[in-house]
Image (cartoon, rainbow, N blue to C red; front, side):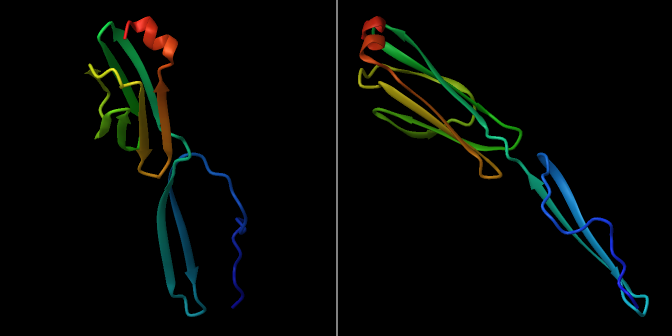
Length: 130
């Protein structure tokens, strides 16, 4: 028999972030019915990542925060600071006067990546009394 055409034709569609189910069904000339389903998700939104600092005359406290509905992980590192997991928002005090930069990279389960970083200028370091 003649194939029936669905009014939804092949093409390019713009989909919002979310979970989707794609289904295809068919019936052959003998009346046998078949269906195939495919689930997928779209997330084009970058995670958030922020880095700030507070200072005293002898130390720098780096403050970090990252979030996303589909957050996978965040890593942080800085001058003289080895990379560590910082998926949970937090802060850390550093007494090493070489700790002049800090960065955070967050990745979500869809592979979207956001990096935030802060580098203290000489004027900022002097204003801290370091």
